[in-house]
Each structure stands twice: as structure tokens, then as C-alpha cells.
Length: 502
Ligand code: NDP
Image (cartoon, rainbow, N blue to C red):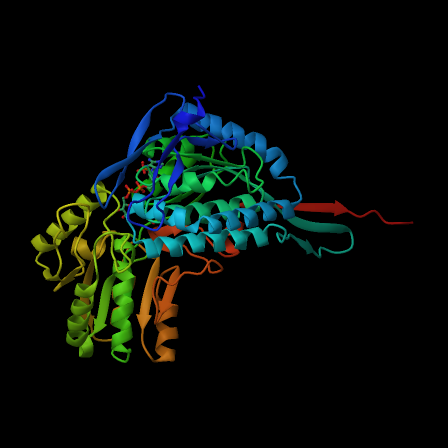
């Protein structure tokens, strides 16, 4: 049942503190065929502001019938979208990027209200969203196959073709940025999509999707559904969906792979968890290394899959680094995401807050020493003080498991070979950091580390042209860069017998 438009749009103020003071229209419906509609059941769920614990609005929840409707729309749109002049696909993405940029302040304010990240980070995220969409807009008409010399009896060539309807499931830590990482390469290459936002942060993607029609995308190319894990399950199991791309926990990644295997063997790309080592050698610039260590773990409240959550410091400078890092962590300003000097906002949900606090309690029980933090900050909102654990052993859960919060362990090592072994001793392999002024050592260690991204004298330093993804159980496939395009196309080989001209 399609309800009146008034019921799928809520009018309210994004924030009373940020720069956006005017009221705006928040779509709350499902975005299918370029229209916001109510879910078939009319069921909604509550979206909350994690800094204040107050309700923002209700959003419609997609069940199986709604996912089917979105998939049918995407399947119909695929017929023409996959066949259109690719430069038209590029133009739509470029226009969407412009519209995102024109609405940067609004989108950033919504992101900060919904996710809790500081407004200055949200502004950066929205700028990155525009970069990603533009980059893939540029790629749309540059997807090439190859001609293969197989001798003069045949003409052999390959072309790259889209897969069909792609299911995409995104998390809550970078809601709008993940929307762009998923949408960009998929639609540039001629696929159509059904994307599910995370249940705790659906708002920014819904507003951004309201620009899709204006950007020139035909109905059904981009479809957005809000909902819980069950909605994601319908997508993963769907027989008409040809590929699933997921960002989230390794545990849910396993469910998705299983669903793909038992349904239609849809192609799978996964961007999962991490427990990334951040190594500080005794020849590093200590001041800069400490600054990067701070960014590596506390940026975005530690809700970053590649967070530098295991710090290893060479023994000669361990005490100096520990003292400097403690001081630096204690300088981080926590609080209202809309205050310009705030560095760390709340955790995005009560669920995540509780998970992190239980890891902290476990670390204490396991015998690790709390150097700083380890407690809730304030009594309203899901804030956690930046936490450092020392005196840890490699078998402790706080060293092995992804905490996904502002909690880091720090330990010392003696030799290069020892730290390589420590760093690689993980089920994960998403990223790693190296801090050294010795270029040979930097290259040697980078070559030996088992991770999809290595940052040297920097951290959390992304670029839309550089691929990102995991080794080991941190994932399958790559996002961003040219590599992401491979995950959204399949190779067709064509071979023509050449008759002899008598
Ligand atoms: P999940 O992996 O469970 O959720 C991520 C997304 O998957 C959400 O959209 C979620 O929906 C959806 N989902 C949940 N269950 C299923 C399912 N069975 N089939 C299909 N989709 C599903 O992460 P959580 O939010 O529960 O966070 C748990 C941990 O995951 C965190 O502590 C962190 O360690 C890790 N994580 C990693 C991220 C990364 O960037 N790699 C991002 C987020 C979390 P819903 O919103 O309803 O739960």
C-alpha cells in the first residue's frame, strides 16, 4: 500500500545547535522507483540521537514484500540502465555529486545528529562522498575489455558486463560515505541496486537519495530500504539479486556468505572487522607518531574497522611514548558533536556503548592496567572516555577481538622480526601502521605485514583512488579505486572464427 506523501516525509530541524537552523524535510519512507513510499505493513522504527538519547523520528521498516518490490524495480531498470550509453551513467553520478556538495551543511548536520560524529568530521565525510561519486562518474565510460591475439584464425576479445541487481548492506559508522562507496562503482558499471542502511543511522542516506531523481537517474536504478538485520537477510537470500556487497562484522559476513551459498550463489564482497596493529619504532618522530596513534584509535569514536587498536612500541622509547600518548588522549575533547572543538562524539548506539563497556570490564578482569579512561563520560549520551590498556598479553580478548570503540592496547617489543610476528598474529588483516624514519625498514615491514592497507607515518589516511579491503577474515574484494569496478562487472569472452577469403 502506498501511503500519502505526507506520511513518508517528516518535517523537523536537523539540529538546534549546528549551522543548519532552518527546518527541512526528512524522508522517512522506503526509496523505490525514485519515490518515497511507506512500507507495505506500515511498520516503523525509532531513530535516536546518540548524544542526547532523544528520539529524532520514526522511519519505515522494510519487510520481505518491500525488498521484493525494490528488487523488481531494480530488475526492470537494469534492462535499460545496463544498455545505455555509459557516459549518461557518468553524468548522473557527476550531477549527484554536485547536489550532495550543494547540500553539504544539511547532510553533515543530519549525520552528526543521527550518528553522533562531530560536525567537522561529518563535513569531511560529505566532501568525500562527492569525491567518490565523481571518481566513479569519470570511470563510467572507461570500462574496457581487451583484444587477445590467438592467431589469425580467430578474433578473440573480452568485454566487462554488469552483474544485474546488486544487494548492498551498509553499517552505521560512516553512513553516507558507505552509501557512496557502494553506489558509485555499482551504478557506474550499469548495475542497479537495492541498498539497506543500518537501522541506527538511516537518515542521511534517505536525504541524499532524494537527489537521485534530480540527478537524472531513471526510476529503479537506486533503491534504498531501511530496516534491521532481517531486512538484510531477505536481501542476502534473494534469488533475483546477483551480487551482495556488505560492510559490517565478520560474524554477519559469515551469515551473508552462507545465504549466498544456499540461495543462488550470488557473488559476494565483504568488508569486515579488524584488529589493526600500529607499530612505533625507536627511530620514529615520537611527537608525530603519538599524534597518529591518537588519530588511529580515537578518530570517529574508535568506530572504524581499520582503527589502530593494537599499538606496539619498541622498548627503548616505550615509557616516553606511553607518557606522551596518555597526555594526548586526555586532551581529546568529548561532547556535543555540534561544538567546533569537539574531537570525539558519543558511540552511535546504546548497543555499541554496552558492547564496548563490557570489553573494558573484561580487560580489567583479565588483569590489564588502565592507563587512562575505562569509564563512561558524562551521564547523558553514549560517551566513553578514551581508554588505554597496558600490561596486556597477546591471549587477552581485548588484544584479539575487535572492540570498535575508543579502546586501545599498548605493548612493547624488541626486534623487527618480533613485531612482524606479533602484528600478523590475528584472524584479521585489514590495515596496519608503521612509524619510522628508516625507509628501508618501512618497506621491509610493509612487505611482511598481512593486511590490505599499510600506512607509513600516517593513519586512517584514505583516498578514493586507493583500494581498501581485507586480508584473512577482514574481507573479500576491494572497495574504491579501479579494483572496486572488478567486483561489479563480469568478463565475457567472445571468439569469432575468421573465414579465409579465397
Ligand atoms: P553487523 O555486521 O551485524 O551489521 C552491519 C549491517 O548488517 C547492518 O546494516 C545490519 O542491520 C546488517 N545485518 C545484521 N544482521 C544481518 C544478517 N543476518 N543478514 C544481513 N544483514 C544483516 O554489525 P553490528 O551493527 O551488530 O556491529 C557489531 C560489530 O560489527 C561492531 O562491534 C564492530 O566490531 C563490527 N562492525 C564493523 C564495521 C566495519 O566497518 N567493518 C561496521 C559496523 C560494525 P542492523 O542495522 O539492523 O543491525
